[in-house]
Every structure is written in C-alpha cells, then in structure tokens.
Length: 223
Ligand SMILES: C[S@@+](CC[C@H](N)C(=O)[O-])C[C@H]1O[C@@H](n2cnc3c(N)ncnc32)[C@H](O)[C@@H]1O
Image 1: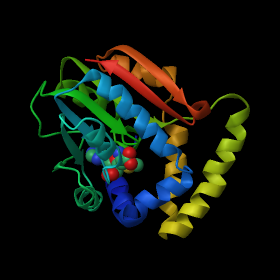
Image 2: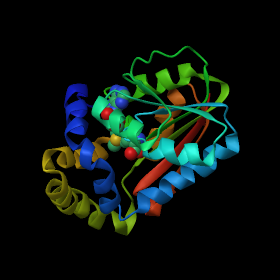
Image 3: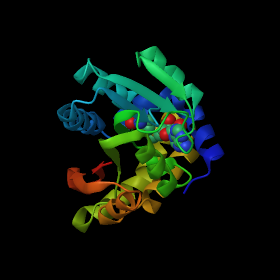
C-alpha cells in the first residue's frame, strides 16, 4: 500500500528519464516482457482495452502496434508521464486515479496494468475497480516485479537494493525514487499470494506466469 502523493511526485520527477532508465536497469528485458503481454492480449481479440498506470505508454504502444484494430485507452494519474505517452503516440489518454476511475461499468473487454498495481494505495480496492470496468468474461492482465525464489533470490535482492538505486540515481538524479522501487517490490505480494488477492476481487481462472526466473510475473484473471 503506497502513499499516492509520494508516488505521483516520484514519477513526475523521473518522467523525462523514465524510459531510458528502465531499459538500462532491465538490460532491455522489459521489452521482451511487454511483447509477451501483447502476444497474450492479442489472442483475446479485445475491441476496447484500458491500460491502467500507462505512464509513458511503453506497454500501450506495443499493444497499439500489435492490435491496430483495438481501441486502446491509456490512463494514469501523473500528467508529466502522460505528456510523454502522448508525445510518443499513445492515441487515447485519460488522466485519472486508478482507485476511482471516470469510466462506466463493464465498458472494456480487457484491462492491463504493467508495473502499476504495486504503486497503488489499496491493491484490493484497485483490483475491484478493474473488475467493475470489465464486461463479464473480460480479461485482466497484470505485469509486475516479483521476488524470485531459490538461488537467484539473494543476488537479485543485492542488485535491487545496492546496484539499481545507485545506477538509477546517477541516471535520473532521483535515487530516492529507486530506493522506493526496491522497497515496493519487497512489500508487494507475488505468486500464489497475488493470485489469491486477484481471486478475492471477484476474478476467476486466475493464473501466474513467472518471467526470467521470477523477477517479474504475469497474472491473468477473467471477470
Ligand atoms: C512504473 S510506472 C509504469 C508505467 C508503464 N505502465 C510501464 O509499463 O512502464 C507506474 C505508473 O503507475 C502510475 N500510478 C501509480 N498509482 C496510480 C494510481 N493510483 N492511479 C493512476 N496511476 C497510478 C504512476 O503515475 C506511474 O506512471
């Protein structure tokens, strides 16, 4: 559970360097993850899709490219991130808080959220809001960081807490935003715990797909 004002200000401060910093920190792997999401969502053939916490539009742009016939709306509560999304070509943009969205019930065939839910003030409340906007049978997809288990866990945590904030702080001038990133990943439920949270929000057929040894995961559910 996060403080919305802190989160909004943190993303506003790093917005100009967000895209480049992401690619450096993930060594480009985030591009593969977004392509995997677009591949899954394409199979659902949604007519209307809402990409929540769209930020600078990284996932929305990959999906726009993969699904030119789908009406995709990108929504976020941080205007400086959305300004970059618009400049990069995200077609439909709405500035709004994902905890209380100005969209009607059951208006979307799919909702996606990449690296966004972890930053929200109330994970269960946000999931219920996502469920509200999906038509019955509509699809939810969440992509977010998770903590790997086994041998990878210790070196990954060392990278997360020591190397990542140092490199990102150097690139953006805002190390505190990346100390927060490491803390937020530690606090965020993953694997079966996240599946159970999604199920409690009313979704069925919930599943998890770990990526790259579990440093990120894709969760799916049906409304
Ligand atoms: C790590 S960025 C992810 C951006 C993009 N989805 C991506 O994959 O790169 C997280 C985004 O979540 C947004 N966010 C966090 N809490 C939010 C909320 N309650 N409502 C809307 N957006 C929120 C932030 O403003 C930020 O742009």
